[in-house]
Structures are given as structure tokens and as C-alpha cells.
Image (cartoon, rainbow, N blue to C red):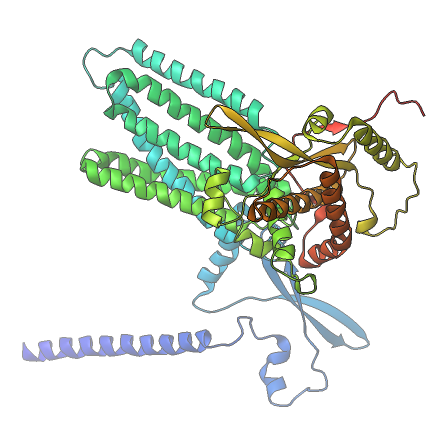
Length: 555
């Protein structure tokens, strides 16, 4: 028995030793393959004969060729080897094959990574897409997930409010609540489109922030409706759906400009498709988390639930702000042009003036709609007269204190010059461009204590038909200079305790001074902006939308 046991134990030790030896050999072979610096196999000219010095004269020169797939980022390598066979030369393309233990994983990565890039990332990423695209996608995904989680909570509270699971509740009453709620949302959609559709393109970022704030307010009203008395439930969910309708209009209108920005150097249709695929995946992920969130809502205390809700809301708004900071438009709108003018003129010598790049302005420009008084309090900026930009001619005359004869002569002279009655040169510099607008200092009535009215100075600008974006930028610079000159005169008069009276003579003096200042700085300002990366020919300034044209005038 002992001999048999010894034989069995010796056989067992022999098997273990044999397997251990095989394992060591395999491990050594694996390490050798893994430590290879090149993933490609040894080519015919890399065999032992060449390494030993044989046939060195016949060693061909390899040429590596890469085939890049711009749609998915897939890369295929070919090594072109020139082999001599007598007097004939033949070219042979040898595909690189990786023979190592990680071959299966590498092959999977070769197929999986290009497929993911083709589905979710745009053509040319990251070389041809603007900087920050991937970060924009990450924060956009966070926004989508946070909104879906809060929407689940809002839907649950609405269903509880309409009577789901409660005795005596009928499907007809629930249907009536949903019909009224959806109808209010449709009405808000139409009214908001009528009121603000012309303003979206001139202030994309702030309207996009407005859209996210609107959806947050709407979801919050729907969640909180169940905690109010029953008569307030239907009005609150209707108001919440109206805010969500505002979000749909504003976000849809601003989405085109945002997608165009990211499509620079790529394709807008490809960008739209990739954003759609990304939102589909985040929607699926959001559904999973939303299901888990909805299941645990009933088990969470009310205080913890509201704390989680406000954390998600803050995360949603913070993500939207981060997304907007990543977008650096290279064309000025009203806010950005005012920032450029202030940096160029206020508190600086013209010789030392420096214009900030679009990337720097994107980190500083305001992203929230605020009341003017509140904004001046936060920014500590002085109050300047209002600028009425692109007004109708009747309002232009109403605000101006000039005699009608002066207004008529200015109008006819400028309109004639813009129609080509004066000499023009297509190759002139920006400071020699035709104006395309008329400008005047004026006044506006301000109510005090709801009873009396006082007049304060303002600036009014009217455009001729066919005015260009660059001419509008010049007009705003002119109006901004004129408004600041008016404010300086007001401050000087206030220090000397003399009332500021805007008569025609003083008005013409201030306008002439502003015109001289504009003529001396506009050319340099234009060139400096262009050098900093700004495109004034694409400026998007907010106007009242009027253009004027002289008709039925006798020559």
C-alpha cells in the first residue's frame, strides 16, 4: 500500500512539475511577445539571413502606408516591400498582423473603437472640431440625466395629484387635467414665439441659459403642486408646462447656432446626427437611473428628497454654464461689442489698447438676463444714456431735438451717398465705408414716483435699407461713444451745480465731437479686432428691426 501511495504521489508531483514548466515556458514566450517594441510581425527582410549579414545588398527598403478612415478613425497599415526577381521588379503589399497573446483584444479594439467613433463623434474629431467639443458633450450628458431624474419625480407627483391610486378618482377628471395642461403649453409656445423669435440669434448663450432655467422652474412647479391645496393643483401644473414650453422654443431656436459652431471644419448634418445619437444613449442611461430613482422615492424622507432635487437642479444649471463657456463665437453681438469697446477705450491709451480674443471674452461675457439697475450694481459701472438701435424714422424724429430742416437735410445727404451718388471705392479701408445709418442725440421721458415726468438724454439710430452687419457694428460704436460723451457732460454739469440743458447747439457740438472721435479710432479698432480673431462682418446686434428708405422724392 505504501509503495502504491508513493507511486501515486510521485506521479502527482511529476504532473505538477510538468505543468509548472509548461506554464513558465508560456509565460516566458508571452513576456517576449509583450515586450516587443513593434506590434507588426517580422517582415521578410528582417529574417535571420539579413541579421547575420547575408544578402545585405539585396535588402529592400520598406515603405509603411497608412489608410485613414475619416468617418470612423479606423487605421489600416500596409508595408510595401520591393523584391528583386531577376530583371523584373515586383511590388508586394503585406498587411501587418500582430501575433501575440493580446491579438484578440487588439482586433476587438480595432473594430469597436472605430464603430464607436463613427456613431458618436463627428468627422475629423479632434483635429477639425473646435476645442472643447468632448467636454461640451460630457456636460450635455450630465444635463440630460439630471433633467430626466427630476422629470420622473414630477411625473410621479402629477399622477398622484390627478388621483392615480385614490378611491373616487376617475379617468375623465385626470384626462381633463392633462388636456388643460397641454393646451396652456401650446398657447405659451405660440405667444413666446411671437414675442421673442427675432431675438434669439443675437444672444444665443443667454437665451440657452434662459431655456434651462425655464425647464427647471417648470419641473419645480409640477413637483410642488401636490403640496398646495387642491384648487391650486391645476393652475400650478399648467404654469409649469408653460415654462417648459418656453424652454422648448428657446432651446430649439438656439440649438442651430450652437451646432453650427461645432460644425466648423466638419459637416452640420454629421454634427446633428452625432448629437442625436449621444442624446439617445444618455436617454437610455437616464431611463435606467430614473427607474431606480422612482422606486426609491417612496422610501426616502421628504427632506432628503428635496435636497437631492435641488442638487440635481444646481448640477443642471452648472453644466449648462460650463457648456456655454466652452463656446467662443468669433462674431460680436451687442454685449460682446460693448465689452470690446470698453476694453479698447475706457481707462486705456489708444497706443496700449488691446482687444481680447473670442476665447477670453467667452469666459467673461454675462450669461444671465438681468435688470439694468441690478447689473450696474453688480458690475459697478456708471449709468449711461439708453441707445435705441434701429428705430423707425418717426420715433427717430420724435426723440431728436433737431429742427425738421436739419433732419431732412441729413436724411437726404446720407441716403444719396449710400445710393452711390457720391464717389466710392470698393478697395477702401473700413474707416472709409459708407455709414448706412443716421444718428442723433435725443431725450426720453422718465416717470418719477408715478406722477411727474422728467426728460433724460438718449441716443437714437436708424438704418437705411440694405445696411450691412459691419455698418451696424460701426453704428453701435458711434452710438456708444456718443452716449458716453453725454454722460460725461451730465457729470460735469452736476459737479458745477448747473442744470444740463440739451439745446440744439449743444447737441450738434456733442455729435460733432463723437463723429471726430469715431473717425480717429474706427480704423485701428477694426484692424485690432480682426487681428484678435473677431469677424465684424458677421456681427449680430440686437435692433428694433426697422430700416428706412426715401421714396417719392423729387430730384
